[in-house]
Image (cartoon, rainbow, N blue to C red; front, side, top):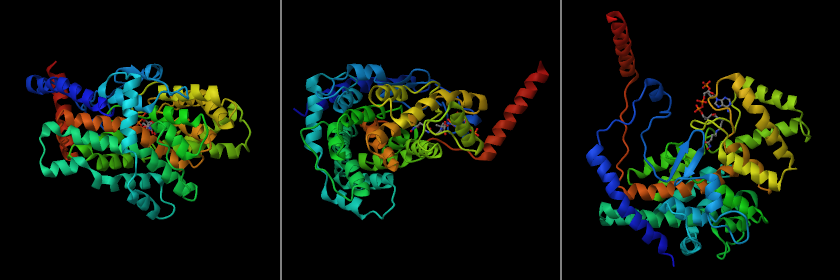
Length: 446
Ligand code: HAX
């Protein structure tokens, strides 16, 4: 056991390579997209300029992992023996190979993780050495970065390795890191919020089940963790965390350096940090309401007050999605089943009714619908994880699954150094002027 995944992946890579090579050799000059000045200044929204087969985001349907919608992923992946949610190990197999795993293939990834999960001692020491009041995301990023010295890829590269084989040490680094992330996250939690009293990992448990165990939280928190890691795993390549991971790895930085960098991108309030911002915003509202359920008018007033103060409604809107995020819906279904009487969930439920019409009326946000961050914190809060600074670390553990799958495939298909071209503002002004004159000339000729 423990080699099924790598052997299958090697076969998939061999069959995929000719497709990429043919596209570049025979169709390299085919135009896919144009770019406007608005897109260049506006964060490259919608520019089709990246390639990944791990996931695809449709604005109306939401994310598909390897062609499967999220409800299909939850239905088809093998379920945990002692829970309702699928094993994260099965998702790893799906993301890497594109195939739904058998029970045996899930057990194989389980074995892979068991072999690799022990943390070097210095990682605990790095976490211990952080000054007080450090944000857990800064600690998480540093802990991962420190393990750069373990990198097989870095060693092999310096020893001299064929480009064709780059993916192999990236696979080793990627799986080594994934297996260790739950322990790093759980130790950061213990250190910051439980006086350093950590619970030893249980090698008989699956990745998410073991995480729940190390957090010291009873069932169904193991299922909450499986759900959480799976829905956060991937969202195409263009979001800040995925793109950062890909960009940094494109310079042949190893998995540790690349994942540490992506964690820093995820730590921004417009991206992963939104889940803690949502909770803070909700808590302020609950305090204001003195712990009672508000009326619809009070919720409307709170939302308008936030907007009128020049702030965004956290957890709402998205750069690509144009409907309710299915990752929100899946969490909502879980909450309706397990915690429908929870006070905070009642707030979230009311906001779901109230916010979209208000954002539509305000007319700025292109999507008035909730994204996944509108819901994650409420579930964590319910199960006792109330230190909301920590929520983005949980996001980071999940997001690493998809990004590592991408990094391995980036190496396998030989994607080169990323290096787009920049222009100056004056150059853009000249292009704009030329286009204006051309249009005016065209009109005169008519
Ligand atoms: N509340 C109020 N205004 C909003 C808004 C919201 N939730 N979402 C967008 N807008 C505003 C924007 O601020 C922008 O205003 P200006 O023109 O004054 O700058 C305008 O509507 C157009 O923005 P957009 O094109 O619809 O959205 P963007 O692609 O620029 O930004 C964001 C997408 C997710 C950053 C945005 O919707 C937002 O700030 N949402 C709140 C924060 C949040 O929930 N972030 C998490 C997103 C999911 C994710 O990546 N998680 O990791």
